Amino acid sequence: MKTIIYPGSFDPITCGHFDLIQRAAKMTDSLIVAVLHNSNKKSYFSMQERVEMIKKCTENIPNVTVDSSEGLLVDYINRKGGKVILRGLRAVSDFEYELQYAMLNQRLDKSIEAIYLMTSSEYSFLSSSMVREIGSLGGDISGMVPDAICSYVKERLMQENNKDK
Ligand code: ADP
Image (tube, rainbow, N blue to C red; front, side, top):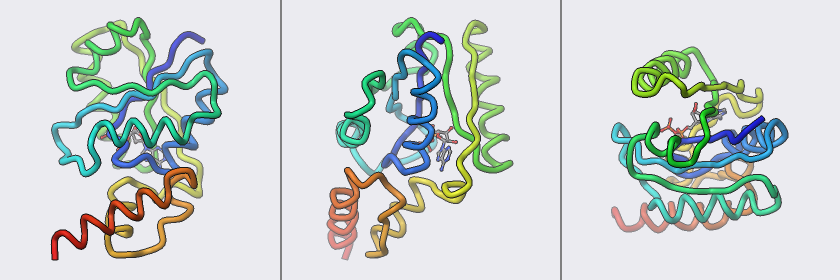
């Protein structure tokens, strides 16, 4: 299969995202993980931090590259020359959002297709916002984010929490 683009906020990358990346990398010659700005979400980690964290987690997967973009997903995809995006599904609530997202992208560019991977059961509950919440309260986030970035994420979340006091 040609290039697959996996867009998302990755604020931060979780084990659920990483599991999808590992599985999708086996299905294609080239997987681009693209950190995008989601106007519905206020981001916690900077774009650069998010990119660096994903790079660290994926450094041993040769066909994965990490990138970022501020603009529209369809414009980004056309610039990259890929036409297939990957998204993940956890629950019915994800389906509703993903359907809307896919319809919108189709309206902007009919040639773009999306493929979906179901979450692995052990990560079905996991989201970046849950990691941020638990980590900022000093809870244990090991097993929720990849080992390569776990201590960095813990430290950053604690720092931010202390700043607010
Ligand atoms: P966005 O703001 O674009 O939704 P996210 O980083 O929250 O970005 O999610 C990116 C994609 O990864 C989405 O398709 C989401 O459903 C999927 N995803 C997030 N967490 C998981 C998980 N635990 N298992 C499988 N897919 C997931």
